[in-house]
Length: 239
Image 1 (cartoon, helix red, strand yellow):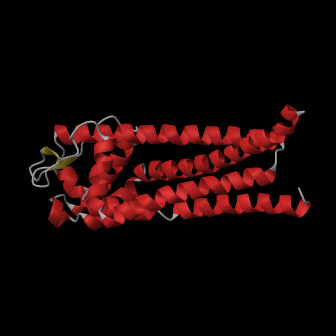
Image 2 (cartoon, helix red, strand yellow; image 1 turned 180 degrees about the vertical axis):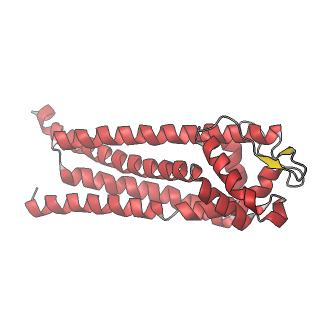
Image 3 (cartoon, one colour; image 1 turned 120 degrees about the vertical axis):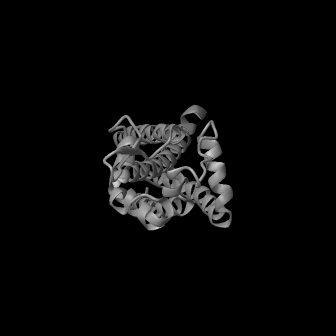
């Protein structure tokens, strides 16, 4: 009798955990998808380079920004194997824009984008399995909905902490991210000698972050509405 009486509690707890997991997977999938899409958008990268790193600051002719942006996007997303852009001099000779150590750093960045893509796919697959299990199981919608809200609150607290840190000390946030993301110091480039860092200053990355940021509240809102709808339907039915 005791074992049977505990089954509903165990089931409800599992459903709450599954609901929280579904919410977190949804948000992680959204964030990684946005990063992947932005990394693969050569036109957008070129436009932001031109805005925050104009020709007078980089030495790159304005007409070549589109080519550099497209080459960068193609390389980061695995559509080309070499990170290099060639300028044509007045005498017809070719000038290589990026030095080997700059290309090596971009190879590290390409690895991060590949990891991002894999995480996005894994989160999507796990989310599909979780939702399918919840639907087929026909579980307690209220428990699932409340679990989703718990997951959203946890994600919100984590995101708020990161945003506060970034706004309060962007340099510290930026450096910490790079030290965690890269196993070497290849990201420590010199603006005096390296075109890559002149094309992608901190303001460039801040702009990309702000550009992708609105997607996250939209994803949270959709998940929140779905969770509250499930809870509301259950309460109306008196379950």
